[in-house]
Image (cartoon, rainbow, N blue to C red):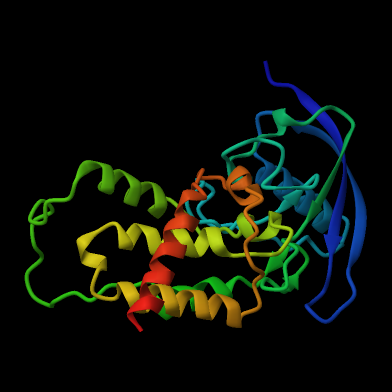
Length: 251
């Protein structure tokens, strides 16, 4: 049986990165507990449009938990009160009737607010461009099994590659560090033979770009791992440190 709940929403509204933002309060009645959080946001926006008000700007794309777009801070947690899910995978059954829900954008110097709940995460794109690639020869595509890779290495590489770049690690870190993201992108290539050509350059370039863009240092609190919707391990940070140190020693 479908259940409906009533909600009070405190939503961060900000016209652009230079404007002073603030919370606005909205009431929603009869929200289905079967709906997703983003569907609830759609209902809010339909209500606001019907009242002649400006809808809330928020990011979304696939709504399947794989694009990393739905970056919302909900009741003090990235992606909300559920574990190992993105905002679009969060359902309203996780909330109680007449509950007040506070919704904010990511809070990080590396992710300036564009509007309302949308932040600029192109810093992640710049970090990837600095070294998150491999050299490949043009021509025919080799068979998938042409390069034998130990299963343990392949599994670890796939686990690291599951990072969707949502930025929850940065948003939850007290230092605003991007180390979990960078380490995941370095690790999944460092574990594979295809990634060895740029191995030394990759670690130095990506860490250098991360520092240049103003992300904080890692102090191993582990908050990033806890809030990562894909469960990326902080063991990758240790691997990044090894890759970086190895590259520096080669210099």
